[in-house]
Image 1 (cartoon, rainbow, N blue to C red):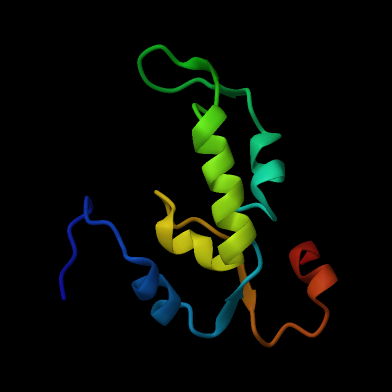
Image 2 (cartoon, one colour):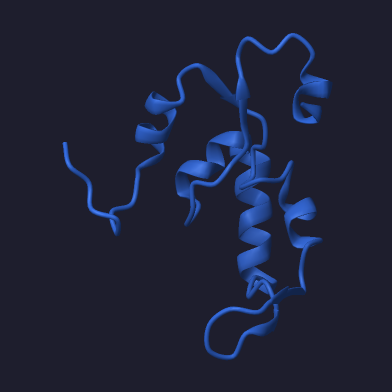
Length: 101
């Protein structure tokens, strides 16, 4: 099937394509919500008004994310607005050193 550059992939498509890999980061590219929030504020030089970027997640949204991640763990990615994550080969013998290659 031909895909257009603006098409978005579903999480199931990513998992099928990467069936030889396992998800190493359960919340975007991070271990949990707390680690994700520690990257903000961050410098984002692109687009109109680029500069310091806040997460835009606070109060109720932040608490809902925490609760969702607490209950669902890595399965919370099915409800997140993005499908980013770090995947490692299922054949990796030593997971602690897999990112050092």
